[in-house]
Image 1 (cartoon, rainbow, N blue to C red):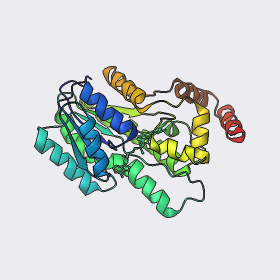
Image 2 (image 1 turned 90 degrees about the vertical axis):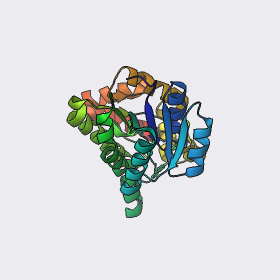
Image 3 (image 1 turned 60 degrees about the horizontal axis):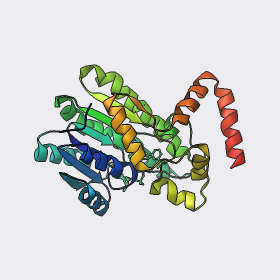
Image 4 (image 1 turned 180 degrees about the vertical axis):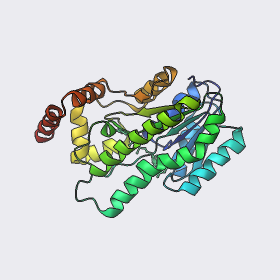
Amino acid sequence: VQIAHKIAAVTGGGSGIGAALCRAFAVGGARAVVVIDRDADAAESVARSCAGNAVALQCDVADAGAVDAVISDIVARFGGLDLMCSNAGIATGAGLDATPETWRRAIDVNVLGHVHVAQAAIAHLLGAEQGWLVVTASAAGLLTNPGDAPYTVTKHAAVGFAEWLAVTYGGRGLGVSVLCPLGVATPLLMDPLAAGAAAATVVAASGEILTPDAVAATVVSGLADESFLIVPHAEVARFWAQKARDPDRWLAGVRRLVDST
Ligand SMILES: NC(=O)c1ccc[n+]([C@@H]2O[C@H](COP(=O)([O-])OP(=O)(O)OC[C@H]3O[C@@H](n4cnc5c(N)ncnc54)[C@H](O)[C@@H]3O)[C@@H](O)[C@H]2O)c1
């Protein structure tokens, strides 16, 4: 699928990977780019930084009614929706000590956020000529993030949900992709890394830290290839294959990595 002339929207568009996706879609000739974020000022400033027709809309993806309203607003303004990136997500840095509130917020944003977006957007995407939904999960959804239990669990759920959508709607004209990066230089990773947090330190030790623009470029080429699984870090595909081949050996390797960081 190509970006040119598409009406594209990105949740979590106010920072990091989402902001880079918005800019890449604008440069790629999208008819409209909608920057959606919980943080209205951040969304506004990304929309201003985009070439072409970009607008900012405020929305917390954990709120089903708010997501529904924002998608209706997009369709009312632009007459449809072609490319929806459900990208907003949060890390917790917590292990077994995570409170029920931390678990609930991670589930609300990292799992139900995608469910709300799909529920609101799929009818419009199915009505588009070549509608496409991109779910941002993480390498933690294929492998594990040793320092963050709620993140690992919710990202596995996001991969599962994207796969379910692809199976259920893929034959009906809806494209689905799932984005699974390892470390990316955004506040989500770099702020805890600067503070010496264990989860971020292990991610940084696991592979190269890519720029958000490099990840956005991989998404654009993954969409052009119409790939389901978009994995910007080559090492993630390698680790994932190793895990499938020999789970015990892969687990031993991850434990060694954790012990050495
Ligand atoms: N940075 C990494 O290393 C990395 C790696 C793999 C996956 N990811 C995933 O990529 C996605 C984007 O992360 P990022 O690294 O760009 O982080 P980021 O913190 O730079 O950006 C996330 C944006 O999402 C917004 N947001 C958070 N919760 C929201 C909510 N409930 N509703 C609406 N907006 C919300 C934030 O305001 C922020 O603007 C996330 O799903 C994250 O889990 C990041």
